[in-house]
Length: 158
Length: 286
Ligand SMILES: Cc1cc2nc3c(=O)[nH]c(=O)nc-3n(C[C@H](O)[C@H](O)[C@H](O)COP(=O)(O)OP(=O)(O)OC[C@H]3O[C@@H](n4cnc5c(N)ncnc54)[C@H](O)[C@@H]3O)c2cc1C
Ligand code: FES
Ligand code: FES
Image (tube, rainbow over all chains, first blue to last red):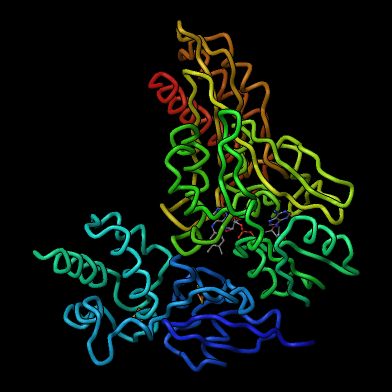
């Protein structure tokens, strides 16, 4: 099986890689590009631990082929903090203790960032529905939702 | 497995038609990738159609909307005009999966995956959607209810693919709605789904109606008797009762962990009636 040559941008950097035709973007990110922040919880689109942005859309990278990234813009959790400066969502997750084991956290952060970019003032219901594709087996969700709503309020300046 | 991402419909069709083994279209991949990874399918060729511009765009045509088969749910929901004309269809597509799934899942994929429980399909059928198909022998157009022929099976021939779905122009005083029953509020497969589209005359009498059901038979169903129960009436209680009875009578469901046969039959009538009520309110509002 011949490998496919893919040119893409990941977190603003141009990246080239070779992948098998049936290799997922998640596997490429983790195994070829060593960006292991995105996690594999289910490999079937149910848990959202593998959430990334592809061409400004929130998607499950376990349900995208690596080959599909050719010419695309990919953003992962690794691009969220600005150097040592955490993104406001990351700070609030720490402040609210919105994580325990942390496996779901990168996915929640990427998904929550996408929410706040689209809707800077979500209601609790809107936030819960938007994040319904992200599963957490530790926190019981409440702290996560509080952290997201608190970040939204802070980013709006109140 | 080979992966190709052609930029034209013609190239995609010749790739599909020329493949030696199983060849699959890749739209959003939210069914295909799950099936690939579970080894349910082992295609020789996967043809990604997302580089074909016309399959990614929504265009207005003769007062209706031509929706590229690979347009993602999130893109459809963001289109203000389609939602105003066909709120039931857009809401049905929006029910598919999570935000992440919406970023990729298409109407073409929901239809061609062939699930009897596919959420957008009853809404599409009720709307009178026409499906454009391209294949080695040229193009053809068929009503949405003729695509799924059994669980996971479609009427598409080798080398054929769906290129777009056409939602027709809306007469005045028309409305549509889709409702599904699931045990939770998000991220589940329909136990029953019901889509209704109807049009009223100036006096409020129903002049046209289409009713479709999902997850109550081997394929989504277009239920003519249920539509007939509405046409010519003012959608009073008696007409709504008759609609519910006709919808329940059309069901031939399975018993499974999601719902028993009797439950599905009963719920199909209830949902059809509730969807008709929403469609009626929408029709009165425009
Ligand atoms: C977590 C999760 C939740 C889900 N929830 C729901 C739900 O609530 N309701 C629901 O109905 N579905 C649900 N689904 C199933 C799936 O998301 C939908 O069926 C979706 O619409 C499929 O579209 P797609 O573009 O991703 O299709 P793909 O996966 O790309 O394709 C699906 C099938 O159709 C074929 N195909 C695709 N496009 C064409 C075309 N243009 N011409 C010919 N063949 C084509 C493919 O070859 C494949 O066999 C869910 C899936 C996941 C993973
Ligand atoms: S690993 Fe992708 S959704 Fe769970
Ligand atoms: S913190 Fe453990 S799964 Fe969410």
